[in-house]
Length: 418
Image (cartoon, rainbow, N blue to C red; front, top):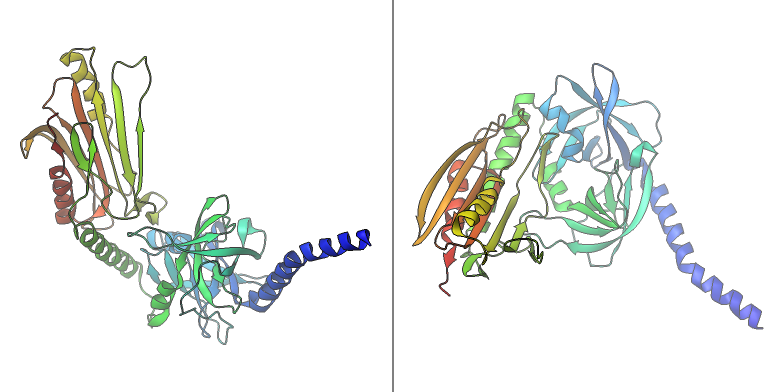
């Protein structure tokens, strides 16, 4: 009797896993004919250079994938072409790039096929904990289905992403994550490892396919559309950043900008090394996601750091030399094909009564007129052996907005007399 009881317990423990396996098999068998593998082919070698996944979204053969999967078609159309393989097919078929949404990392391809089975977009609200099925072709191993859990939108006011608890792997980018009814909840876009995945919300897919272009755009038209989208996005981000006063945080004897918008990752630390001649307390913030443009350029990010440095056993000359190292180590590199060299200007400024040395550096994007990156570095000069160093990095804003945001950031720094 006890033996029979143990056997029944074991069966009940295995039952949920068996049901999950049956659900996965059923979902895959039902919807696999909506899936494709995307291949970007180098025309010189006639070999694949990029692999991704995609899925049919209309009966006339339109395919959705990630922009980053097909970005080389936009950046170097003379060197690359696209092809796709349907899930049960062997021979690749040609595809043409029809539309892009670079901000949300989406692209729309025309396959030339007709009467294709396709996936519908889920329109209603998704409840946290909903079981999802992510489909794609990881590492060119064949179409795969991975179960995961919908965990809502991440806390990021700049870039909307769905948090998926599940294993996404390279090659699954552009594939769909669907519910049990086969409706698309999101598009696989990134992973942070350890069962942390990210999806592009399906609402942006709906927008992309709502009114697809009737004619194939030229390479120049695609670049122009990319520029328009990035300029519109930076205007929206700027409006978000300036909607409220900058929150302040005390760091030593200074008040500094805290999280500029909800959802930034902010961290603090302090030095406790007895060998150092000074102490440092730091506070840094950065956006969680970026906008991929090409292999040599990502944009749409905000990052900044404050460093409160104090010393008691050294003179002001030695302390100045230490702070000079902070001030000169705040630059950034960039790919020459994507951005111009930095152009910098250094000044001594009176920041609302706080004397500071500030350096402002700008660089432009070669192929996206009107967009700039900025680095602002500033150090306080009002105390002999105590100082604040602050560094601000902005990527992908127009000139007026980027300089206004830098000025607003600097003006938010004040000194509190002990």
